[in-house]
Image 1 (cartoon, rainbow, N blue to C red):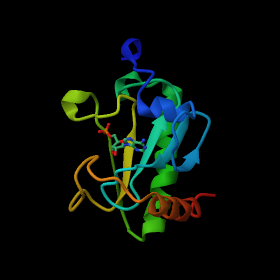
Image 2: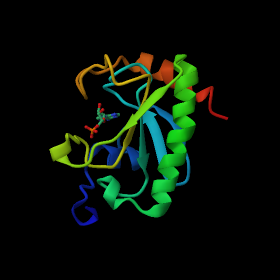
Image 3: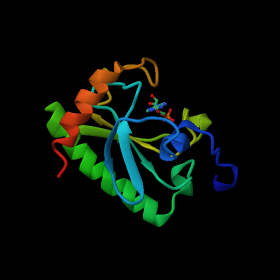
Length: 140
Ligand code: AMP
């Protein structure tokens, strides 16, 4: 809910450049970066630049921008990771298991089968940067 949006959540800090991220793509209204606790190699998050907690809070512009970013990044992830398919999911609210209260799509190569636990294990930073470079190489 916009009224209760937590300006101190980690993605708000990333957007204000107060916290780092390994960026893979950006447009006027959305940003895509590597998940630091990936459920598989190539796990990317797409977030709106506006303060929205769930999908129900998103403006039309941000919805379009996020969807466009998912399309661009998802195709690049499939190519970079050499997988002929990908999975997109997102959680709304604590009751659904959302841990960061800023809207985001999870975009992952392959299927949900065999994934690591949600937000369970920090990735090696260099590995994240190497994978990000590979994904970026498939974005025009
Ligand atoms: P959710 O539980 O759907 O809100 O997902 C939040 C995701 O954000 C999890 O997959 C976390 O691994 C990820 N995450 C948490 N902090 C960061 C961060 N600083 N940079 C990148 N990803 C993060």
